[in-house]
Image: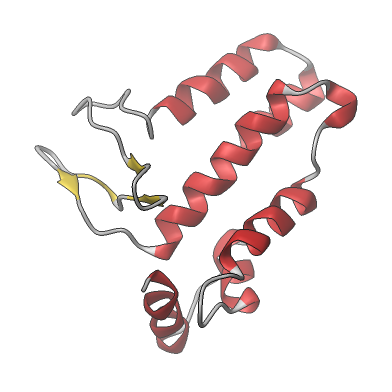
Amino acid sequence: MALELFYEVSGKKEYAKKMDLAFSWFLGKNHLEQIIYNPLTGGCYDGLEKYNVNLNQGAESAVCYLIARLVIERNKKEPEKKVSVEGARKKVFSILQKKPHFNSTVLNNIIDGKKISVEDLTTIEMIKK
């Protein structure tokens, strides 16, 4: 989202290219050349280690992938049709609300970079199931 803001403020195409490059990390443009997004489950692996993919698929990883994808998709549209950050958040909520144990407060805290409690982690684990 930072690159998107830089792009919006400066209008420099280099930031749009950097957004694409950053997003391509999920699709295999990383040091392991392995896809991180799992199209079969709609989830996202938790990350890369030195020699392998961490096969856990936490809610935080899925949220990060979904937000990154929404940012990329809205920037491929015409500028006047861009979705706001709040619009992207609503889209992510609409997807996750179909999951049992969905808790919008927990998701807001993750998106806003706030600390989450042990109870929140339990909720996240329940959302994953």
